[in-house]
Image (cartoon, rainbow, N blue to C red):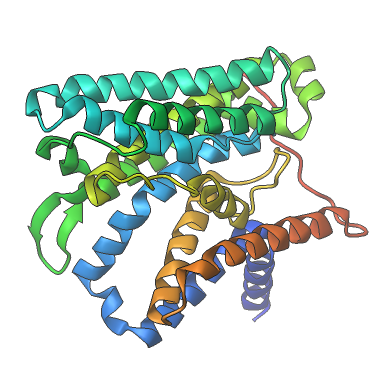
Amino acid sequence: MTRVRGDLVALLRWAANPTGTVFVLLAAIFVAIFFANSGFFEGPSFMAFLKQAAPLVILAAGQYFVIVSGNFDLSVGALVGAQVVIAARLIDGEESRTVPVLLIMLAFGVAVGLVNGLITTVLKVQSFITTLGMLLVLYGAIKLWTGGAPTGSLSESFRQAGRMGIEDVPVLGQIPWALLIMIGLGAGAIALMRTRFGRILMASGDNERAAALSGGRVDYVRTMAFVLSGVSATVAGILIGGYAGVSAQVGEGMEFTVITAVVLGGVVLGGGRGSVVAAMAGALTIEALFILFNQMALPSTVRPTVQGVIIIAAVAYAARQRHRPGKTVPKATAIATPS
């Protein structure tokens, strides 16, 4: 009996912390969706939901690296839109151009992330200003290049990753490629945070000076965090282009949605604390919440309000936990050279 009581107390404590709360909230939203539409959890419908959610989950993993290091990346939405427009313009329906354009997109995503990272770490410009400027540069450059309307078209092979998958699977119908890509990149992000790179990244957000004095290459890992964010935006752009096609609104506002997701996952703004798994769960929770809104026939205009409330509430809750009398906040993992 004592053991059961102890397990129950531990469970309640886990659910009450910011990381555990997102899983409880996700479960609660799924229950609400079930009562609104039980057919949502049938194999094909649920796979379609995961396919739609995959780009945001991947973006959340990339944004996690930046936020946990103590920075922001506001340029990801514009980069997603730019990548889709670039792909459509350069491929223009020609299958033979697909692979070269994918390589160009990857290089462009790395370049944008590298520029963001170097301006932030070398020139010491605040990441908020750096990435806000990059957002405006990307939007302006794409509008100038396309004349305000996207041109060209995506090839069928380009769109495979975003809308196709393993077909004729019993019960599920289809296992989307987007889901498998999301799982693969998520596993890679988890593994990366368990390396020395991840420990330095976490420590640099918690205490930059202490991380540097411990031998951590703070500027390097922070720059690489922006590069990883740029790569995640590129992959998200590929999936969104395949799933939704090309439009002038692709990626618009995604930077705020993904920051909301990461914060909802318990990642502390300012860096040093948080789990990449919880950040990705936060993205799933946001997507599930939007599905619930659709089931309740709420207007899409309510979404920005909800995102704002989530950010304010999550930050306030984290601050309250951090400053609670007698509360010991766990510090970032010490940097140690892997054996």
